[in-house]
Length: 119
Image (cartoon, rainbow, N blue to C red; front, side):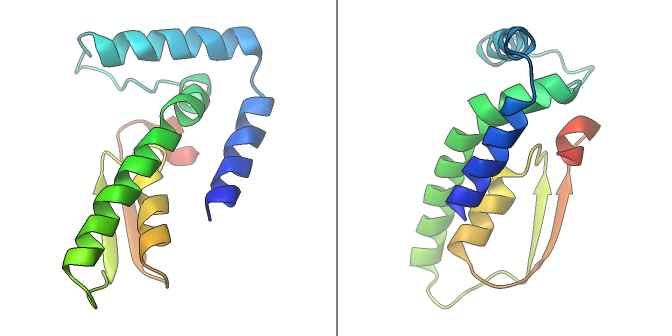
């Protein structure tokens, strides 16, 4: 599962020019460390999404895995039948849920950044 995610992220970054990736990461860092405007999505285009996926998604995935594993440990035998992720962006939490709980489930990811959902 994790290798599949790493491979997918590596393939995305491979197709993005270094200057464009650098500019997108710098802008994203500014948004995440400063004030994020609420009138528009932070992830505006494919370059932003690829930069986010390479820069933030692995850490988000790891944190979500830890949180969901903690939930699974506290509720042994419970397994979600579905997964709804508001603000799911590039799907890191969906990947984490699949790592923690095997098997199929209905999954819905909602986000206002269409390029993130497309990824």
